[in-house]
Image (cartoon, rainbow, N blue to C red; front, side, top):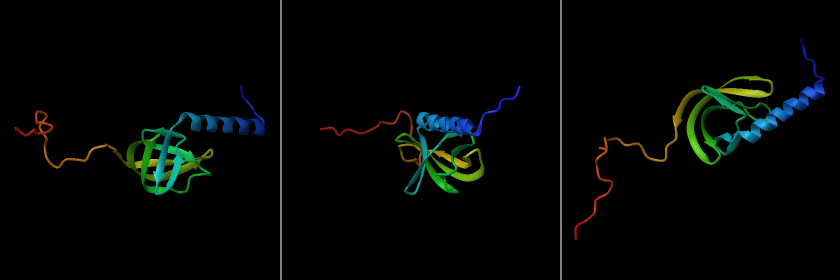
Length: 116
């Protein structure tokens, strides 16, 4: 069985699908002063709207709403059906604490109090 939809009906369905993806997805990337909404993401990459996204390459920051998730080194991998695809070359989780250059024992005190 084959299904044929008129071009204007297919365009309306595609627009509704994109609107739904943008509404349900809070992920975005930032590079410099620019911010782009992610349509969908998977283990090795993500997709942006082709008409809004420039040819990005290099280091970007990924956010879920206002929460910083990770730093990503990306490269554009293709474009299809109005989406531009990007792949991660490197992804580093963003944490709120500075990395240590020494071992901290789990039993070590958090702070020292003075005796009076």
